[in-house]
Image (cartoon, rainbow, N blue to C red):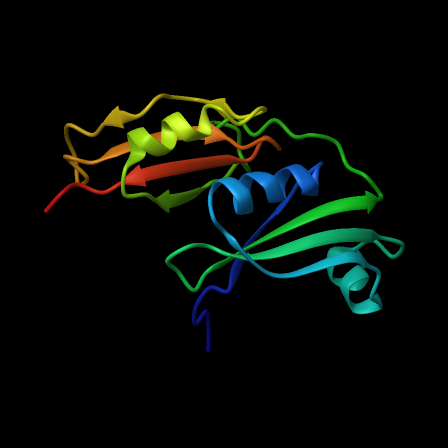
Length: 151
């Protein structure tokens, strides 16, 4: 008895439409379903807000069977958190990419993205020969883009 896998990763965003433009239109995530107003009792019980109204997008991460779920709380609305990488509770998903420099150039044109680093060559350690960067999406969510070393 215990963990047998992972189904999805979920983040709360302040602007679901902006998140859709970023993840779907720019990065190619596939929408599996979208719910404009989640008000089910079971959902409210799970999240601990008995009067919650939440919009969501449930996305397939390209090249995987893992999913990304994005919530926008219409009620009650929360406050933006400081997701700086060294703050306890901050997190990220590392997305595999095939050409980090090209994707970096493409993402730089998307308004509201904040790069923590430019692409960095990994010159030591277990991923030597790869490339990586940290960034914040337009909702302030940290993500890593990682290009594995060429074999």
